[in-house]
Image (cartoon, rainbow, N blue to C red):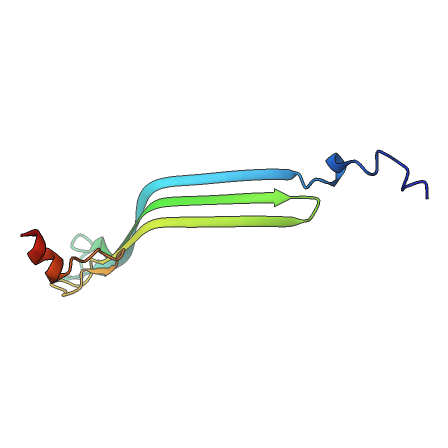
Length: 118
């Protein structure tokens, strides 16, 4: 019964869930290249051996926002992530019909709207 009458235990300040850590990460853009290293040998002489890296796929991204929030009292964490755009390009296949494998959806103009504008 002593706890019910204790004004310190009934304080709303002690019942609040305080944020222990809030981390924000933002990246405007970047790219990665997946490369394959190959050895080309046309003769047995080490002078004619050549090592080269060939790009297979290129990944480009833009507008990355991440946030991490930690609350100790409830032992909870919140993680959010947002990606503005992602492009994956096929560099390996020469003359491909689909050089861009993944890209954001493009806005399409219908033919009726195009004729109305012209």
